[in-house]
Image 1 (cartoon, one colour):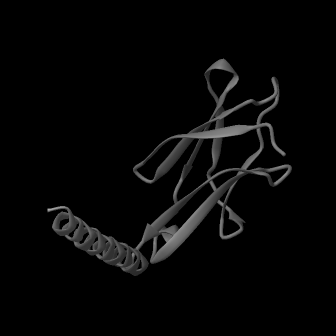
Image 2 (cartoon, rainbow, N blue to C red):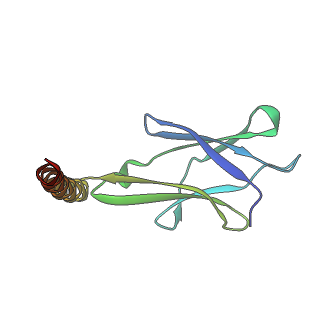
Image 3 (tube, rainbow, N blue to C red):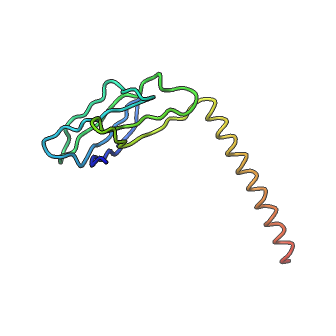
Length: 123
């Protein structure tokens, strides 16, 4: 189990940025960012203030597509997952959202019927 901690600070303009903390003094953390079990290129790990390190990488354009895409940030030496995030886009998103709206409508209809029945019974 890794002692490193990765905390996302922002995701903007196709760049993921975060902070690596709990790094032993004098050691540069070995970090890999994986998408579909392949390491992404151009992962930058640079020193920051207070013994922390800054992690930054670009989200590749080929990752954006229909469905759910997951990226994992791992400690390179051990393979321990330090953080992950997912991007959901395309047709799958529409289907997922529509199913959720349909469920909410059904629950709302159930609540309306129960409330009306309650009002009739207590009047």
